Amino acid sequence: MGPIIDVDLDAIVHNYLAFADAVQVPVLSVVKADAYGHGALPVARAVTQAGCGWLGVVDISEALALRAGGVTDARILTWMHSPATDWAMAFDADIDIAVSTIEQLSLVERAATKFCGKGTRAPRVHLKLDTGLGRNGATAKTWRALIAQAAEADRAGVLRVCGLMSHLSGTGAAEDLQQGKQFAAARELAQEAGLHIEHAHIAATAGAMKYPQMRHDLVRLGISLYGLAPEESGAADALKLRPALRLRAPIRRFDNRWAVAVGEGDGLPPLVSALPPLVDSQGTYWKIDRMGPLHLYLSPMGDVPVDESAATAAPARELVVIGHDRNQDGELVGADADDWARAGGTINYEITTRLTRRILRDYGGHTAAEGTNIAWPPMEESEQRSKRSITAPLREAVIDLELLQRRLTRLTQRSLAVGAQRRSAEFGVDVSSDAYGHGLDQILPYVRSSGLPIVARTRTDMDALERRGVTGHYFPDAPSATRGVYGLDPREPLPPTLSLVSELVSVKRVSAGQRVSYGYEWTASKSTTLGLVPLGYADALPRSAFGKAQVTVAGWPAPIVGRIAMDQVVVDLGDRECWPGMRVQVWGSAGNDLSLSQWATWTGWSPEALCANLGSRVERRYRGRQVMVEVK
Ligand SMILES: *Cc1c(COP(=O)(O)O)cnc(C)c1O
Image 1: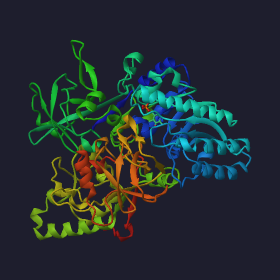
Image 2: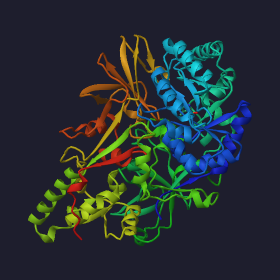
Image 3: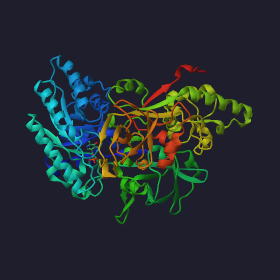
Image 4: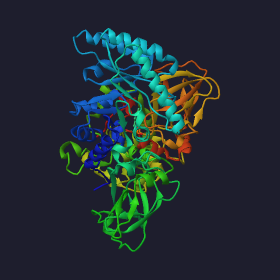
C-alpha cells in the first residue's frame, strides 16, 4: 500500500449545507483544479445530490469533464478562455460562459449565431467585470460598451446574458467595499441597458461571510466547501466546518532511516518553519527531520521497535501526514492543512490543491465505483487531451524525446565504458513520479530500449512498473545522476527535457496606480500593459515565486506581478505590443535555457519536484517521437 488521501464527502455536504444556510442565497460550489485536490467529479456529484444547483470551474474542459461524468442537471460556470476556444463545445454541453472583454464577447456571439441557426436555445453568458483586482475581467472603462453590445446580442436572441460577476481582492474591508460599490453601479448600468440580470455574483467564501450586502443572487463557495477557512474570515468557527481531506502513508525504513513516501514532488511545500509532530496509527509521535523530493524523513519521539522486515513487507504503521486527530486527553494532535500552510509559508488552499493526482483518493465506499480513482493517469489520457486542447487555455509541458534519446545513448555508452560489473542501478534511469511528469508510458519504451537499469524510488512507483510488466530496481536514495537524462541532476545542470509553455489569455493596458491580485501587493508605477497567464499554483507555479519569478514572452522577460493565484498569474509586459494567444515560455526551451533551476531558486522547490508536481490541467505534448525505435 502506498499513500492514500481520504476524502470525506459527508463533510463536504455538511460544509455546503452549513454555508448555504448561513448565506441564504443560492450557492455555486467551486470545483476547479480538481476540487482543490479533492476530486472534481465525486465532489460535484455529492453537492449536486445535496441540492446545489451551480458548479464553477475555470475553463470549459473542466466543465466538459463534469458533464461527461454524468453531472447533467447543474449549471456549470466557466470564466477563463483561450482566444482559440471552440465555443460550440460549451454550447452543446449547456455550459455558462463568463466573458471578460468585448473581443471575447464578439467571438462568443459569432459562434452562437452559427449555433442558434440549428434552432437551439441561446447560450448563457455572464459578463465578468474587473472591479479592482486587476486580473481577469473587463476594465471599468469598457463596461458601457461591453454591456451595450451584450444587450444587443441578448435582444437579438443570439445570447442570453443572464449573469454579472466580479471577484474581490480581499485586501481589507475598505478595498472590498469599494469593489462592491463598483459592482452595484455596474449592475445598474446593465439594467439601464435593458439587460435582465438574474445572477449577479461577486462574493467568494470570505466575501460572503463578511459582507451580507455583497451576496446578491449567488455566492461562490470554494475553500470552505472543503472545510477550510480563508484567512481571517471566521468561517471555520461560525459554520463548524469539517475538513474533508486526510493524507496518510505507511512508514518504512531504509538505510537506518524512517520515511514515508510523500514529499515535495507530491505537492507538500518545502518547510520554512517547524511542523507540529505527526502521529501514527499506533499513537506514536514523529518529528520531521527533512523533506525530500519524494519522501519525508522522520524520527520517532519514543521507542519504535525496528522491524527490518518493514522495509519490504506491508508496514505496520501508518503516519497521518495531513489531518488532525484527538489523543486520549482529547487534545488535537498532528498537523492539518493550516499547520502545513504555516510551516510551508503559504495558505491552506495551496496545500490541498497541489497534492498530486498520483496519490490514490479514497472516498470511503461512499461512491465506491467512481470514487476510487486509479493512482496513475489512465492510458487513454492522450485521447482526452486532443479534445481538451480547444476547450482550455494553453498549459503545456513540452517533452523533447529526441533530447532524451540522445542523453540515454550517451549514458549507455558511459556505462558500457566503465564495465559491466559497474552497471548497477547507479547507472540507471529513475522513472519515479510518472517519470518526473514526463509520462511513464511515453518514457518507458525509450529507457527499455537503452538497456539501462530502470530505477524507482517508492513502492507506488514500483507497483506502476509491475503493472506494466517491467522489472525495476527499488532504490529510495537513487542518486541524482539517475535523473540526469531529464536535465534534473543539479551536479550536472543541463537544459530540462520538459519545458513549460502557456499563452496570454488576455492583455490590457492599465494606468499608473493599477493594483494587482489578492492583497493588492503590487501597484503599477507607470502606465503599462498587463497580461494574464492561465497557470497558477494548481498547475505549476508555487506561490513562493511571488515577487521573484518571471516568464518569457516573445523573447522578452516579463516579471510576474501580484500574488500567484490558484489558476492564473499576471505578468507585466511593459510597453511592448502583445495580444491574446501570444506564447509564454515559463521554463526550459529548445535552446540552452536553464530557467528551471532559476524557478527552483525563486521558489525553494527542487527542479525534480517542479516537474513531478505539474497539475492535471497541464497537457503533455511530445516532440520528436518518430526517432524512437523499440528494441525488445
Ligand atoms: C477560486 C475562485 C472562487 C473561490 O474562492 P474561495 O476563496 O476558495 O471561496 C470564487 N470565484 C472565482 C472567480 C474563483 O476563481
